[in-house]
Amino acid sequence: QVRLVESGGGSVQAGGSLRLSCAASGYTVSAYCMSWFRQAPGKEREGVAAIDADGRTSYADSVKGRFTASKDNAKNTLYLQMNSLKPEDTDMYYCAAASGPRVDRGGYCYNALAAWGQGTLVTVPS
Image (cartoon, rainbow, N blue to C red; front, side, top):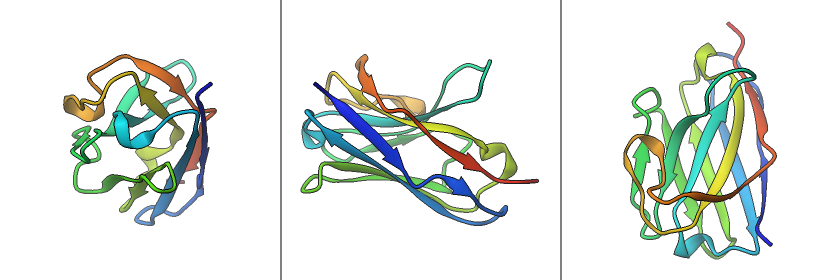
C-alpha cells in the first residue's frame, strides 16, 4: 500500500522560504513521476511541480523560478523548495504519486495519480 507523508509546512513572511518533504513508503520514487499540488477549500486542485523518473521537472507558471522540486532516491523522499513566497501561495500542499514515469507540462505528471498524502499547510500572511 502506498503511503505519502508530507511535512515542512508552516507560516512564513512574504519573501521567505520553506522546504516541504514527502516521505514515501510502498512506492519507489525513482521509478515514477511524483508531483506537488495545492488546493484550498472550495477551489480546484492546482498543479504546482512535478518530477519524473529521470529527474526532469515541470512547473506551473505561477511558481517558475521560485519553486524547485527534487527527490532523494536513497531516502525515497520528494521535496519542494519554495523561495520568494507570496501571500497567494497560501494553501494546503499535497504530494502525489503517479502510476507512470513521465512528467507533463504545468506541474503535472502525465499518468493518473495513484496516491496522495494528507497535506501540509503553508501560510504566507499579507
